[in-house]
Image (cartoon, rainbow, N blue to C red; front, side):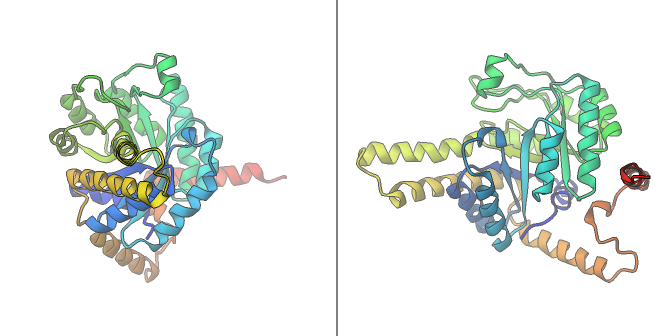
Length: 335
């Protein structure tokens, strides 16, 4: 079942484990996530990276996620990663995503603040979760390589200022990791992570988790990470299995079930490994129980607002959001 992403992540932060988001691009990946999550009783987040999906039916992929997510016995959310502009963010929220990452970190700082803040204002109307970024996380993507985009570590003081000005829910931090394959093992700055954790009180997200040893995954969580992003490792497991099957059975092996199902299950096993490393196993049923309990209390409360986006929110932040909505409504009136 679908559960608000903020609800899941606040539980993870409070209980010192991490929620995992996994990038998907086909039916087999969508199934692998559900199978892994239900086998381990873990919450999971379907992550879509639109930049890589320009030549497929995105609405078809979203439909499959929503269908299988609705039927799932564990908490599920849908998330869009590395969205680069405000208009696309609005469209994604309108399509029913539980959250997204606005990646404006390569813009000048004040522009990053402005764009991220505008996304947060829009998302708050619909209870959507917003992640932003301070610093730059190097990646293996072709466009980043061509533009020579290099790592820029997160500045803790700037992170505090950014979170204060934007009111976002989650901050992606750059602490020495990178997305894609590692040529040499990264040097993770745990002291920097601790300093960031002490400066901000929002969810902290880690990109570039693929390729890390289990001890470092656990250490990142111990020092404040509550949201882990995975892509390279699970994709590699999927395509490597296809290569192995074709190498063993030859080029005339073209029966889909003989190739795609073993590849799907190999991806499932890799996802299970990540779930166990991050400690989200055996949390699914508990989260569903807590969420249903909260919905019941809200339904029977005289003060029920009917919108999770305003639950447990700082009063000043709530006033600011409501005031902004009222001002926008007034501006839209033709007087």
